[in-house]
Structure formats: structure tokens, C-alpha cells
Length: 114
Figure 1 (cartoon, helix red, strand yellow):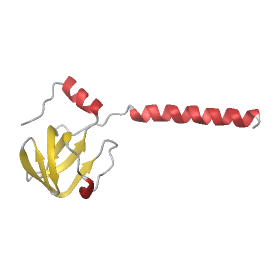
Figure 2 (cartoon, one colour; figure 1 turned 45 degrees about the horizontal axis):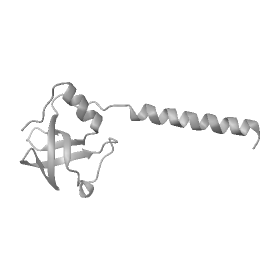
Figure 3 (cartoon, rainbow, N blue to C red; figure 1 turned 90 degrees about the vertical axis):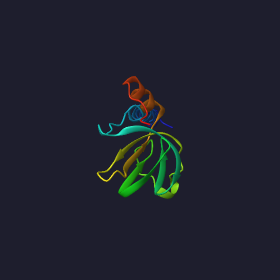
Figure 4 (cartoon, rainbow, N blue to C red; figure 1 turned 180 degrees about the vertical axis):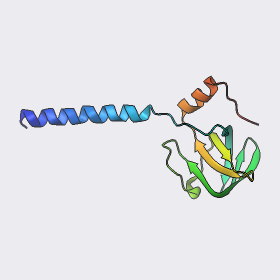
């Protein structure tokens, strides 16, 4: 390989590494009315959050730690989440939280609503 090619390749690798670290540090913002919860079971469209059965409303979404929508048949996660209810009291949005998002919520004094 000639020197220009090696330099270009090295620069590309460094830029990709920098971009990865930038994107991994981004935190999501959640609606003010969303709540922390402990998801213990999913049998779509029924979720058990904080020992209470809740049903996913029409158009509801489940978002993974990468903020991409998860299909209902793949929603087998158990753990801490943030959720939002619609005006009928059904689940509207569910976000699976990263460990950093859980720590951030705890640092802000937020607690799991039971």
C-alpha cells in the first residue's frame, strides 16, 4: 500500500471511532408525563408494569435502547422502562431504558411509580 492509501484508511478508522462515541453518548428525552416502571411480563397487547396489567392502545409503540421501534412479537423484555399512557389510560409508548438512563432518572430523584 502506498502512503496516501494508508493515511486515508487510518483517518477513516479514526473518524468512525469518533462518530461511534458521539452517538453512544446521546441520551433520549422523554415526555414530561412519562413514568418509570418495572416491566415484569408481556403477552402482547397486555403488559404487566409495577404489578398492574396494562393494555397497549391503538398505535402504541415499543422502543428499544437504540430508540428503534420493536415489533410486538419481539417484545419479551423484562426490566426498567419508561412508559406513557394515552387519554383512555392505555399504554401509548414504552421505552426500554439503558443503564445510563436509569441512573439519570435516579439522579433526578425520579422513582418507579407503584
